[in-house]
Length: 416
Image (cartoon, rainbow, N blue to C red; front, side):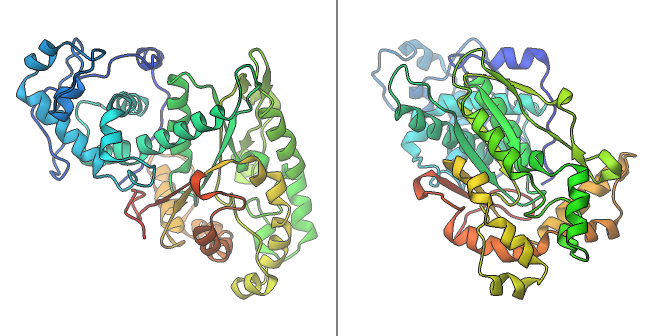
């Protein structure tokens, strides 16, 4: 499936979905089924809310729900289409991994529906006519991951007493280049904000050395293609990382502000440089969550003989990696790992992106340049991904780790 392209929502979009108490739209047109390839055609009836009685087709005696006549007046199409959506959600490969059951999905269906509409609007999709692929991307991927993240935030904040200065939860997202992690983080950040939880985003890219420092690194390691350009361990400003992360987790009060660094990949003909501080975005406290993403986040250093067997040039990279736990991983309490079957997928994903750029008339790398670019990362993937997938990220705990297997089309699949 082609990746969803993020675009800032129109000003009215955030306002229209920002209330966590707003009633989700009701699907009332012809029923659809998740096994049918055709897109579903739905209609919104904004004046009515789907009761859990209508949704589950079972008695509910709660006085807090809609009055009985709401359920009585619900047309058969309403019950059928909402039931089908419930079945589709329950069939997703991440349901069990995020700790949900069919009963828990039923109890939280308002969150699923509301978040689904918000994501559709964020990506300028018609939430009433989603294709099967779009529906899967939303209800089998983005929404389950968001609900897991929000549950992690709730658990984190519950450890503190009322009146405490609660530091934000740092959630690490480790995923290969081109796998969709940046788009996922974009969606998660938006969903947190419309849910009333202040968030900030960071990438390991934001901590690359300046162009001048990268040139100095290259000169200190002549002939090592893995350190010629930015990317591998050793090409990041770790002290700058520590200072930034420490400052972010101190944003626990209103009116506390700081600027978050960004990296300009287009500078120096694509070689890149740290963006000027004047264009860094500003974040304001109190923060509840920091989303920190990167292609090598959580990698663990390995014995030298192991990395040298993959590529002798990795030895200096592996040595540099020893300092990354203290600079990055120790700040992360919850982890998302996007798992791929074959690292060579990275090449295909990058090639697709460059071909699309060239088709749009934008400058893009040639096929040969893509091969050269990806070749500088593949040794690290081959060396470190097996341990990451087997043991989890450096310092991670099983109850705070979500592993998402994806296929070559970047869709979640049932993992082993």
